[in-house]
Image 1 (cartoon, helix red, strand yellow):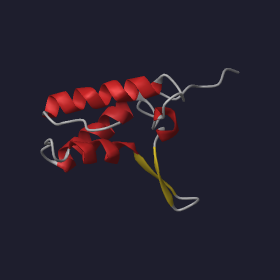
Image 2 (tube, rainbow, N blue to C red; image 1 turned 90 degrees about the horizontal axis):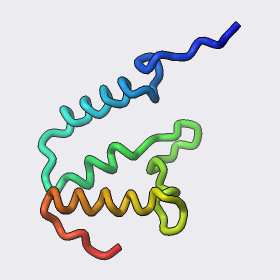
Image 3 (spheres, rainbow, N blue to C red; image 1 turned 90 degrees about the vertical axis):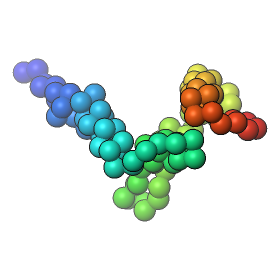
Image 4 (cartoon, rainbow, N blue to C red; image 1 turned 180 degrees about the horizontal axis):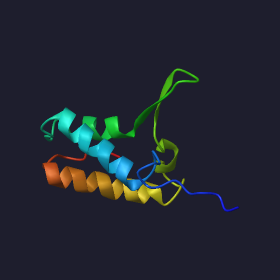
Length: 92
């Protein structure tokens, strides 16, 4: 018998669930400004590991130089956010 796949809505990692969480966060956060954009992004990336009691930054290991193609993507994303909000990126 074939294993039944979870629907996108039924999965916490499915697109519908992720969009729902992002929309809820946007509503709860309020206005995003140049001064608060960093906090919004970090809140999206933080997760709490109940087994250890520690907070982690999702995928932070992949945004270090030389670790993966995600480093260049994170740099490009940071540049885009800075341009959008008109802030100086500062040193790497």
